[in-house]
Length: 362
Image (cartoon, rainbow, N blue to C red; front, side, top):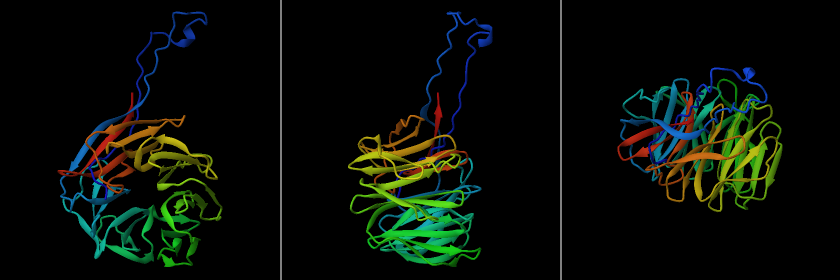
């Protein structure tokens, strides 16, 4: 689960004070008295926060947050096993409901991942070495069961769309399989065996009508694949706890992949292939990454156990700050999501669920 209650909303703005009451056009080229006022750099800062008056089942939760048309839905499950439940917040991160709704309670689930696919909320609930997939109504009032799949590892976007086919991506010790669904009724299609090698982490993201996946194998290789074409490449470095975000406005399929290797956080920028890894933060774990329309935002848990969040500038530098007192106790104890026009980090603290809103500002 993701332990701690913080949401981060990201916004950026800038203001300029008048230097003089004359424009640069009025200044002669040799006017040495004209010195533009330096613009202060942007920093990551906490701008707002929420505490939701919903009592969590336990502090030891796995958390997954998915953006919806109304705002966002937070899904949770106890790490030591229990029911998958959820609640909704609006675009201002205020509660819709005062109680949590139960999504799955037929088994003792220990992990949950949720995303949007074909306009529907998809929830993947893992128990042991099997994962159940459900389409869940926006108000959490009903669900349609897609089936159970072999494997305990699921991408942070458990179903991705590629060329009008929805693929449920589930993996583990026996490899990685993409199980297809087609049509408005989500009829089963032929599954695709992506790899038969044991995998240790996986992530995925969609852009336009295609999907891209990255996974790490037990031999410490990191792999990339475009689902529609099957184009595949790999590099000789490990990518544990891998996550990916895509910039949909880029001319090419640009994305940022973040991952952990040997106790530090690295990033790899993707266009049409895996490229070299670049250090993002020393001594960290449990990375996340999202794109808010302007910046890639990354988060991780530092050496002291604090959550660190920041934005990556055009030079690849992470401008970050520690959210002191926010200390997820394990990798799944928090989530980083974009909704309501901003980036939010979500988790649990002593008095319940909550959120912090962080901004890029001067």
